[in-house]
Image 1 (tube, rainbow, N blue to C red):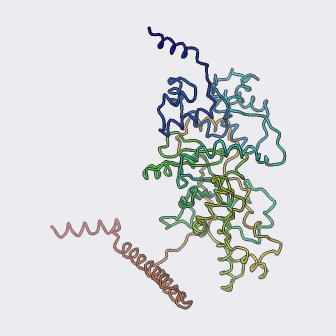
Image 2: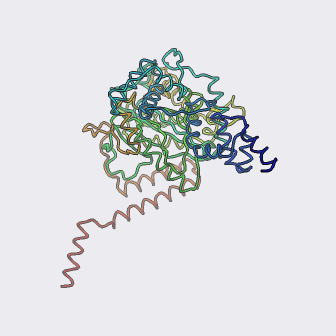
Length: 533
């Protein structure tokens, strides 16, 4: 054996053992994926053996989930598994739900919940020791911190660190058009300004005050060029006012609480992923860590980034102005309809809208949220690294409408614009703490697409069934619109749009006129057979 070969083996055997932190492993994976160097050179740069690099690459999905999940110490060097992995996973799911609702927790509470979950998992004799709980907290970087007030304060140091070490690292892998944020908000869809002052100081989680509410989920990308169709969740699956309506302008779902659930989230994400996969795109979907948002591992084009707990007010673009702007447009459209009602000679107390009207207004409001507003809100949340101190959203021009209604004596003069827009900002949009059975059932059947909260109700207060609109009535309305535009020196482009709309209405009318019914089909068949005899 040559002296040179012996020397090389000696250096290899005497090499200092290097254990990389989670953060360094992610850096290594990014170096390999960039393709700038050979794997052997990268291993040498990080001070590890080539076979160690191969092992890290083999487990890269696990490391990326830990890194981008926002719940793991970035400097951790080992990710030891739990002896009872099923109990560990179930307790972590329950813990995440509890913390997303700001429920104060302690060691004894966690130990008791762990034993309850273990019994549900078929381990009645297992008891949670202090040592097991300590290892559980170390595995998932859980520390006991004091809480003050009803909501945990946003830790500026934590958010700044997360932006620098996690957010900007993963954003470097995506074009801004491929970074999306989705978030839900509760909306009192029938609430008028005269009722707002009675609601403003009350949190609403259920009961009468939430009777006429929906949950709306908005989703837009980082550069504001793409907004996904609005998702609206209400209590009733088939309200009377939807009868004869073949297609809504939004995605519509229903359950008994009008909440977002894990099942509805999965049902929404899969078509989103299919759409991106069909377009041959790889996208990042940023969501908060509420109990209804879960990681779906077998998606083809979508990667999740979960925001750290208690930080969405600072880190989530939708919470930095997108949702407020959307609600501002909705309230503005509602006030315009109310003013039109008053100007027609009707009394304010006689004004009302049904769920179909509300869905139409919600879709219009979402369309009015501009690309500039969306982009500015992503900037305010720190997704862009340039200065974000003067970021503002575009005004929905609701203030003059509120002032006019105050002058008319319709609403109280003490009502402010923000009170009216944000009266439902504290509405719950997802279920509270799940039971042990719900946690285990969800973990054992993550592919379930049914809706356990759905209950058909005989009561439907969303509005009466609407009469069918005839071709003649639609054409007559269009003719009145033409006169309305012409009397106000309307431009030719607007008139052409009305002409195009009338041509489409004529097409609908012709299709309905000549669409054969089952009865006419059999009648024609009988005549045909009679003629052949």
